[in-house]
Length: 86
Image (cartoon, rainbow, N blue to C red; front, side):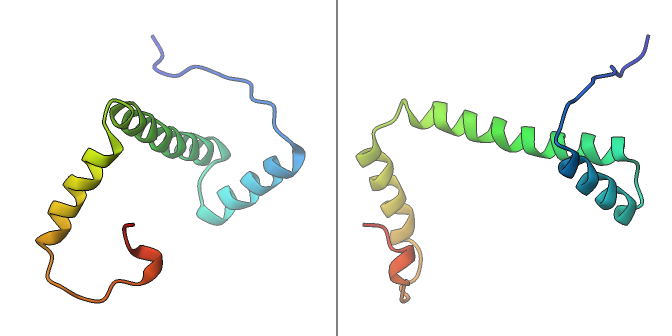
């Protein structure tokens, strides 16, 4: 019994051309590159989904308090305004 399944995927010609070009540059088959990219992106989406489901059950003020307690343990230094917690 095979551990793979054939899937037909429709995509714009330009995307296919880019995939072909990158697979050639990487020295791998189009199939290997497509599997890698789908796997990586799906892993990211799953991680975000898990975090979102965990966060939606929490209170934002409570999470901010926990982050502040953690940051209070970090030695003092200037924090750029774009990175400050308000």
